[in-house]
Image (cartoon, rainbow, N blue to C red; front, side, top):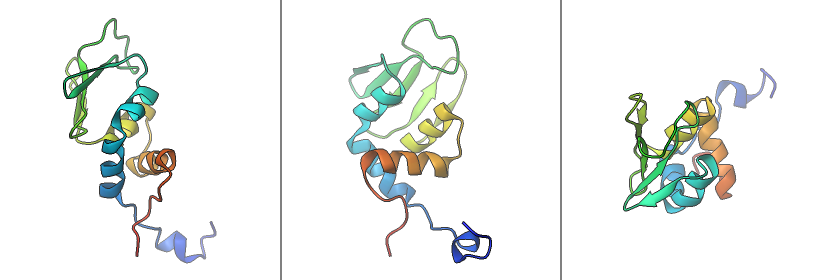
Length: 112
């Protein structure tokens, strides 16, 4: 992308809400991809936090209905699947949204 292009000064806006909604419709496969070895218990996906030496499943939980997640051992938390992927991959939320959109075969940008 050239610094003289419109896209440089006005990058496309990401449709976070649509991406999160689509992610929730496919939440279990997404969670299994990013957090293998976890399990669904009721409305929660329980997993080991790959960013620390977790010994067992239990303190890292993702609500499969809302996307809210938390590691109760460290206090890390977020409100949706995009923030979870950003946390797990150490990437900005915009990049995480584009990654999830690509996985789901949808466009990340706001439709006009």
